[in-house]
Length: 455
Image (cartoon, rainbow, N blue to C red):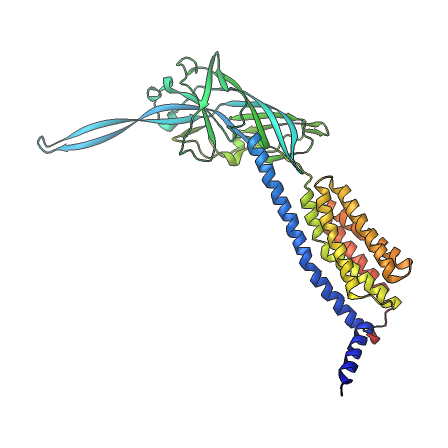
């Protein structure tokens, strides 16, 4: 009676060794188990990417953030009146009182031209880098005589001696030079005008009061000013001129043009040495007027300009590569399974597990090496290391040379195929689908020799 469990155990053990179905179940179970450490690898890549972004933000905050400028804007005070009536019980009459209020109109220039020269570079901290720049922005243009009659404001109610010039920017900290606006022959320094209730999170620079004769009320008034910024990420300009144009040149080879308006294709020039582009925006191209009462609206959505970013994101490529981890493990195990089934060589589940762990370590090697080198070099080193390791390990398992060489070649082709997909953008789905179809065809062709009836 004591021999029955042993007989049952021997039959089960024999079934595990000889049954194709049993081997398929074991291999499938191991693949599911290996998805757990693979998910930790994906989380590791995301954590390193978040760390990179934190370091980049810290670098940018110390050097200077993104640059957004719009101006100059003429801030023009004017009088408004309110009339109140008070009834006098003694005289049985109404007493009229007129109260004067000071409000402001904001007038945009007739023409605005910006000439922007950007000197870009990368700053490194540890394994991370950020794109920063120093830009010199030169502005010029002119105003035409202001007519507020369409706003029901009389000329005699305008306080010309209290008029000032306003410029808004997102990067007050990054300004590296004094800012002065020249109107005709008069020059005015701009100072910070802190307003705790200011909206849209933009800082304000405002001049002193203009001289009465500095701003021509009869003819065209020319202006010009310059600002030097230390900044990062992007440069944008709001087209406040009735005709706004901007020329930008830089040594940055990978610009990304952003905002509502794209540069002119006819004059756009981009090379490895940098780029030169220009924009032209007419008032009819935007949905705001040249005159505003009470306050300046939020015009940030109408901004346009250039983004300066490090386009090669090693962590994004590593994350995309790790998404194919399930495919790599599954196809590698499938190759071992087919070899085991066709050649009748026994492969222990522990040996499958060791191969799977080696495949997962590819991604840790890829991330760690890519932090100190470019992605291609990291991919080649990590891939070659894993392929050589698995090939040599297969030699000890399979006892022959042809099967390990086949496994090494298959892994090389698989890693090359995944690298090509990672580099592609528009055709990644197409190439991936074709590749998977070919792999399925090869597996179907090879598996036709397996006797499934004895599984």
